[in-house]
Every structure is written in structure tokens, then in C-alpha cells.
Length: 140
Image (cartoon, rainbow, N blue to C red; front, side, top):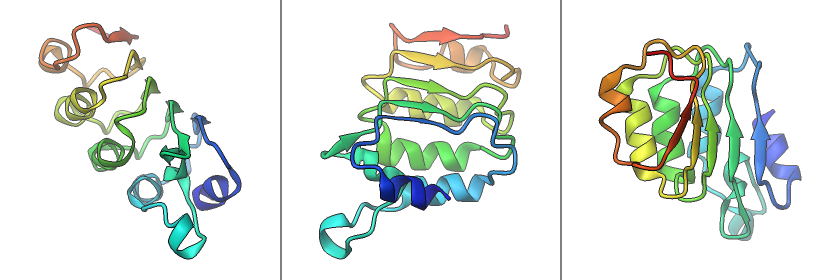
């Protein structure tokens, strides 16, 4: 499904996968890790929006229960430079380390939404390097 979305989008700027409770963490991580090979092989995927021809700016992964740190690592490696807003609300498998690493690597990230992420602690909230990041839904 994610490959089809990316393959049909010429300039993917926003993607809302919120509420996709049957979406596996592996599917999200695989899509985020896949390299864009449009010029080489004519194929594309979710991260097509992360290359120079189309920038992924807004991403909602709200309520994807299986989403965890492996997905955040893939997003960090392939999309962090362009993200301006990210919604991880109700993704309870992410940790302080995973969210913190992604946030630290995302220079344009202005808004992070974390409603229901009660596993995030002051270690994340006070430990990341993004001084002007607006965190919405902080539970502590």
C-alpha cells in the first residue's frame, strides 16, 4: 500500500497514516528505508517525497500501534531534513531515545504532536537539542 501511494505521487508533501491500526511497523520502516530509484529503475515509494523533487514536510503516524524506534531510525535517515511537523500521538512503542534522535536530526521540525505518548519522559522533553520545537500533547 505505501509503495502504491509513493509511486503515484509526483510531489508528496504531506502524508496522514493516522488510525491505520493494521499497518505494521515493518511496513512503515520498509517504506521509509527504501531508496528512491526513479531515475535508475523507474520505481518509487513513500520516501519519494524525501528527495529533491518532492519534499515530505508533514507526516502523521497517529495511532499506528506497532510504530516504534526502528521506524523512527528510518525516518531520521531518509526524511529528517525536510520534516516540519510530525504526529506520533498514541504510538506507544516509541521511546525517549528514538524520538529524541529523530528530533535532533530534523533541523526544520517545528511541531511534534505526542498525545497519548505517556512513555515519553523528561529525558526526552528536556534532553533533545531543538530549543524552539513546539511539543503538543505533552503528558507530563
